Length: 69
Image (cartoon, rainbow, N blue to C red):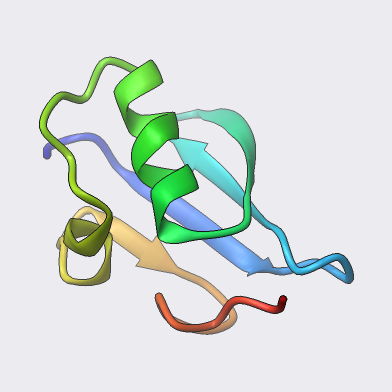
Protein backbone atom coordinates (compact mmCIF):
# COMPACT_ATOMS: atom_id res chain seq x y z
CA UNK A 1 0.00 0.00 0.00
CA UNK A 2 1.62 3.26 -1.08
CA UNK A 3 -1.18 5.75 -0.44
CA UNK A 4 -1.05 7.76 2.80
CA UNK A 5 -3.95 7.01 5.14
CA UNK A 6 -4.82 9.08 8.23
CA UNK A 7 -7.26 7.79 10.82
CA UNK A 8 -8.42 10.51 13.20
CA UNK A 9 -9.37 10.26 16.89
CA UNK A 10 -12.73 8.74 17.79
CA UNK A 11 -15.72 11.08 17.65
CA UNK A 12 -18.45 11.06 20.29
CA UNK A 13 -20.34 8.34 18.39
CA UNK A 14 -17.20 6.16 18.25
CA UNK A 15 -16.49 6.62 14.56
CA UNK A 16 -13.15 7.80 13.23
CA UNK A 17 -12.76 10.00 10.16
CA UNK A 18 -10.57 8.46 7.50
CA UNK A 19 -8.49 10.33 4.94
CA UNK A 20 -6.94 8.57 1.97
CA UNK A 21 -4.39 10.80 0.27
CA UNK A 22 -5.84 14.33 0.29
CA UNK A 23 -9.48 13.20 0.43
CA UNK A 24 -11.73 12.36 3.36
CA UNK A 25 -13.48 9.12 2.48
CA UNK A 26 -15.81 8.54 5.41
CA UNK A 27 -16.37 7.63 9.02
CA UNK A 28 -15.07 4.23 10.08
CA UNK A 29 -16.35 2.24 13.03
CA UNK A 30 -13.93 -0.68 12.66
CA UNK A 31 -10.84 -1.83 10.77
CA UNK A 32 -13.15 -3.51 8.27
CA UNK A 33 -14.61 -0.09 7.40
CA UNK A 34 -11.10 1.30 6.82
CA UNK A 35 -10.23 -1.60 4.51
CA UNK A 36 -13.46 -1.08 2.56
CA UNK A 37 -12.73 2.65 2.14
CA UNK A 38 -9.30 1.78 0.76
CA UNK A 39 -10.77 -0.69 -1.72
CA UNK A 40 -13.25 1.97 -2.86
CA UNK A 41 -10.29 4.33 -3.33
CA UNK A 42 -8.63 1.79 -5.63
CA UNK A 43 -6.22 0.12 -3.21
CA UNK A 44 -6.52 -3.62 -3.81
CA UNK A 45 -5.87 -6.57 -1.52
CA UNK A 46 -6.11 -4.75 1.80
CA UNK A 47 -7.05 -6.87 4.79
CA UNK A 48 -8.40 -5.23 7.97
CA UNK A 49 -5.49 -6.57 10.03
CA UNK A 50 -3.05 -4.85 7.62
CA UNK A 51 -4.19 -1.47 8.96
CA UNK A 52 -2.62 -2.11 12.35
CA UNK A 53 0.93 -2.47 11.03
CA UNK A 54 1.05 -0.64 7.69
CA UNK A 55 3.69 2.10 7.53
CA UNK A 56 1.42 4.25 5.36
CA UNK A 57 -1.32 4.41 8.03
CA UNK A 58 -1.10 7.25 10.55
CA UNK A 59 -3.20 6.74 13.67
CA UNK A 60 -4.16 9.90 15.53
CA UNK A 61 -5.67 9.83 19.00
CA UNK A 62 -5.21 6.12 19.60
CA UNK A 63 -4.06 3.17 17.58
CA UNK A 64 -5.94 0.44 15.76
CA UNK A 65 -7.59 -0.74 18.99
CA UNK A 66 -8.87 2.76 19.82
CA UNK A 67 -12.52 2.35 18.80
CA UNK A 68 -15.47 3.40 20.96
CA UNK A 69 -18.49 1.14 20.70
